[in-house]
Length: 135
Length: 135
Length: 135
Length: 135
Image (cartoon, rainbow over all chains, first blue to last red; front, side, top):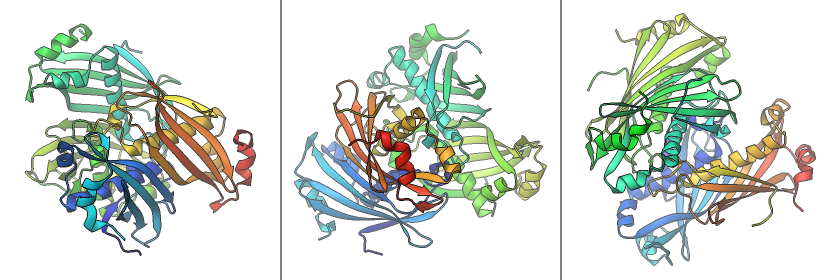
């Protein structure tokens, strides 16, 4: 397994599965969001505090590659790394099935900062996140 | 079929179904909420405007009887009536499968009004809703 | 706090919250289902195995009382007890906010057994569940 | 607006919105899936029939660009085109806000065919879909 900035163990729930008995594709996006928010929480960042200060992070683009499907009540590891590319803060996020560490989903989530409702060049967020960037 | 104050035609989506191929129980609660909001919208009521004036409607209790399951991409009718019982505004909500008008879900949704964050005796809302009450 | 047959710690996710910043009502039903399934899993019961043997448990009625709302990324305890009333197996399910043990949702979930697609008097399930029934 | 093979009018629901009052990112993926399924239904294709014949279509990769957010109870048009690239059947899917025809989400959804559980070169599906391919 690659090295990651943050890894969290999660478990699928039966209601997230569809008629084929596998997790519906859109629910992985929920897992990815929950993982980013848990990382932010762990690092002491607060969306609501940022929002009050006029700073919002929004997802501008997401790419998800589906490799191996998860089933109901399956434990998985959700991992993330963080990069900066100009105004974009890019989360590389991978989901592994815990039982055999097979890669299930590989995602790239591009986010941008809005400052007082306008697209930012990212300098404010870069200061907050700088120590986390992968080279 | 009984008479209703409001009826809307909706359709299930495949992602709302679980592994048994039927709509997951919790999703009917989404349909019920969407139906109430469509009725409010049709009558010209606005949650957000109410909220700015310090008035919020919240669900205090819900009872749902599951009769016949819906499958993916099935059309249904979602119907509601409205009653008042003291401080409570009660939506009687029924869901019928359109193809044979079988009753699928029969629900009772009790709501109360919060005025400036405190439970209200309902006089403000009763004025707004009075013409809709079933005897 | 009352005594319960089973208690599990869970955490809300931000995407489960609506515009008011509190968990959308329908999502509590998801939590309740996930709790029942975790209990069944812990006790070694398998829905899919039951299904292959022609036995299905279905929810026939649910009542939920909403007391105190949960917010995003809040930890809660989800607890259940089990009773039998003739053909019905009734899960009493309560959700408590962990930080102050306030009761958030009190639910009663009635389930019935279908054997080979027909409503059962519950004798098969009663044998499996008998040691769990509350008096 | 570009030309599309299929366009359907849909409406957001309040429970699909998050705390910012805009539709949660993952829900657009639900809209995209529902759109593909409606198109398949309109053309007389049946997933379940395919499945019985050993043919399954699965999403292998999705890219979504988020341009303009939708709010609660907003009407939108969901449009799709279809291309073939070797074994992959690619749905180009765009979502427009109806009120001003602003592009909200631009997505590319790659699907592949599994025949009897094995990745197919796509010949079976190409026959079914050939008349729909964009040049």
